Each structure stands twice: as structure tokens, then as C-alpha cells.
Amino acid sequence: MALMDPVVAAVTSALLGYALGSLPLGGMLVERVTGRHPRELDAHLLGVENVFRLAGAPVAIASFGLDVLKGVAALALTAASPWAALGVYLGHLHPVPWPRAFRAPRGRGNGVLLGVLAGWAAFGAPAWWVLAAPIWGYAAVLVATRYVALATAAGLVLIPVVLALSGAGLTAVAAGAGMATIGVWRQKSALARVRDRTEPRLGDPPPVRGLSPHIVLAAFMVHPLTVDDLWQPPSQRWLGDVVRRGWLPEALLRRLMLLMRPQIQGEIRGIELADGRELRVLLISGPMFPDQIRSLPDVAVRMAIQGATLARDCGAEAFGLGAFWSTVGDKGARVQEAVPDIAITNGGAYTAATVKAAVPGLLLRFADAGGTLAQACAAIVGANGVVAFGVARMIAGEVGRLVLIGRDLERLERSAKTLRRKFPGTEIVTSIDMADCAAADLVFTATSDPEAVVMPEHVKPGAWIFDIGRPADVDERVRDVPGVQVIPGGVVRPPGSMRTRTDIDLHFGAAQVPACMAETMIMTAARSFDRASLGAQTRSADIEFYLREGERLGFEIVTQDDRAVQAIG
Image (tube, rainbow, N blue to C red):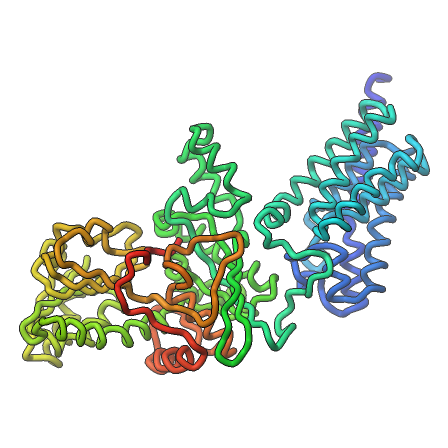
């Protein structure tokens, strides 16, 4: 029994420390003083710096003091037990599941750490001047970098080091190492953002909506198309080496991706609106490939909701769903219901607007190049979709023959009957065979397929192809077919000198973005959040609005052949 006493004492001390650390004292104080629940504060900037920015210095100091008190109390009540130190820190970072009314977002635990060090110095060993080393290390890194996460990690790493050098004993060193491990792991996302230069520094303006009338902040969610897209942010490149060496199988990587949360992986700056304001866009990456988004809809909706929540917490006024994210949750409607306090759009209206603006010019260029529209055959690939069928309606009266190609023959026939009644002079046929595309002089393709669907054997020499698909519908080898022209659809050039921090490649060519991202930009700049595209329907009034407002703000629809333009990830 005597042998069990140290074990019982250690467990009891750890549990007592955990219980104290779990108490949401700071959060309850913030709510009592400000009348706002801590959940309403910015979860991207955790801890005392967040409370300082949004609730003021007195509340921040008092909240921090309560955290210090928890650390001191845990050591005082357990005769400076190292296990109590570990328990109180773990309890603060990962508390018991309190009822929703008492839950509060937890910060980095710096107040609790300070209390632990003070308690160790006051009620145990080593001396206070030894335990001051982590504090001085924290302060030095904070002054040098202004990154709270980096300073916290430095202070944490120094704790077991100084304990070991002072001869504090194996138990204290082990507890200190545990605290350092827990704390650095807690900082992992923030440290990655430091590496990617997207983490705010202490003293930076808070990301609160409407902070500056000269800056417009939006957010846009993207996804990787290929494994290589995962390694674009500098903080992820080491993982690319691990996968390439075969140490992490791709199948396992794909499973692990589903357990991750969306992260900020870049920021677009340099967009100068015609009215003089600067527009910035946070690039939030959701780690799912297109086939995963299609095959795991519930996981995709959950991740899209997490992305929207992150965008809101970072101060963005609107959140755009890019590429395959635009298809999840009833095309964004369920995401908007889950996160009602930020405007969400799937970008469909401006995508349709860019097509509407580009198609007449494309037909005119085709005719100027010697093509005879009245005798031409046009193929619409993906004609079961809203965008592609919209193109069919636009050109049905211009060409001699129209081939609607899709996957649902019954729906295609219903659409064809509608067009035949309106355009009796045009031969309109339906097909589910891509080989029928090879007879077309003009090809318009707009599918949501994650892989290319238009191959060289589907295209005749000299054909003009308007590719609206994102990811691209046209295989790169099609460009080698003699005389073929591939014109990207849904590509927009924002005004100013657009650049991305961390050198993220959007795969759309220099200073160009997809129309769905441009819609997010325009909607935010105009603060016309009622124009958000949600669900399957696209309102004609919204299409006209984005054409008009985009032109006013300086956005340019790209209609020329650009071999650098590819699909977004």
C-alpha cells in the first residue's frame, strides 16, 4: 500500500490541477463585464491579446490575472506537485465539456503558465531566478518577432530545459516536458501561419469587420486538385518530402486529410478598386480532393462550415466557395444556415455573367475568322447543368446544329424540346456519348467533373472550345490538335496589381482569378450581400448586377486564349 501512495498522490494532484485549470473564469468575467459571450470574440486571435483588442485593457488584465491565479492555486494546494502543474495547464487548454452556457474559447495558456512558474518558485524548487528564464525567453522572442505563438513556444521549450539544468528532479522535468509538448502542439496551426506569414503580429490592427473604410476583407475557400497542391504553403513542404520518400502512403494521407480543419494558406493583396479602396482576400484551404468532396458530402459540408466560421472569426465580410466547394450543402445553402453571420456565395451569378459577356464576342470572333455560324455545329458538354444549358439558350438561334451532351438523356430531351419550340430553325439533338462532340465546330463545356472530359479524339481540327469547367474540362493534349483554339471561361482580372502572400499559385495565370472568387470580391466591395448566389437557381437580376458592378469597380472578364490558364485548386 505504501508503494501506491506516491502514485495516488500524483494522480490526485493531477486531477485537482486539471479541475482548477478547467474552470472558465476568464470567459465568465468577459461575459459579465462586456455583456458578450466569449464565443462572439475572434477565435483566430486567442487569449489575452484577443480580449485586449475587443474588450479593453482592464478586462484583459483581470482575465489574465484569473488565469495566473489558477496556476498558483494548483501548486499551492498540492505542495508544488509537478503533476498538478501539468494538470492545470492541460485542464486550461482542454477543459471538461462544460454546459454550453459556460463554455469559452481558451487561449494559449500563458497566464496559467506564469502562475505555474510563480507557484513552483513560491512553494517548491528551484529558485525563482531559475524559473524566470522561460519568461525572459518568451519576452525576448516576443519583442524580436511580435508573434505571440512563437514566443509561447520558446518559453515552453525552456521550461524542461531549465528544470533539468537546475537539478529539479526527473518528475519535474517530465512534467515540464509534458507541458511543453501539449503547449507546442496547441500552437501548431499558429506556428504554421507564422511560417506562411499569415499569422497576425501583436500590435497589428484587429481583423474586425468595417475596421477601415479603405480596406475590404473577404475570404475564399479552395481545395487541392492534386497531391502537389498540398505543399504550396511553405509550412507544408516538409510533408511533401515525407510523402515523396514513401514514408507516408498517399492512401493514409487522404484519410488524415479528412481529420484536418481548413487553414488560412495565403492572402491576396494589391487589388485596387476603382473607388480607391484596397481589397484583400484570405485564401482558406479545405484539405479535400474533388473526388472526396463528391463521395463524402457530409464531411465536405462539415469542412465548408468550418471554413466559413474561420472566415467570420478572421473578420471577413463575405465567404466564397470555390471550385468543388461551391457544390456542397445544396450549393452553399446549408453552409449559410449553419453560419448565418457572414454572407456566403457559390459564385454562380458572376460565373454566368462572364459567360454571358464572353459568348457573343466569341461567336463574333468565330465569324470574323471565316466561320459560318448559320451552318456551324455547336456542342454543349455538360448540358444537364445550369451554366451549360444557359449557353445553349444563348447560341441555339445562331448555329445550324446544336448537340446537347450530358449524362441524363431523359433530362436532355426535356431541355431539347424547350429549345426546339423556341428555335425551330435549328437542328437540336441530344447525346450521352462524348464521341458526338467530334463533329462540332464550336464546343462549349461546363461540367463539374474533377477530371478532364474533352480529349483529343473528341475534337475535330480547327474547332473553337470555350472551357467554363472548373477544374478544366479540356485535356491539355487537345491544344495539340491542329487549328484548335481553347478559350478559358469564367476567368477575371481584378484591378490593380494582384499578388498572393506565400506565393500560392491559383493556377489561373498571373493576376487572374476564377469568376466565383471575383463574385465574392465584388459582393464584398459593394456590400451587396443580398446578391449572394446560393442553391441551384441563379437570378437574372444578379447576373446583370455583377456585370454592371464588376465593370464599375474595374474587374475585367478575360476572353482571350491564354495557355497559362488552368484550373483552380
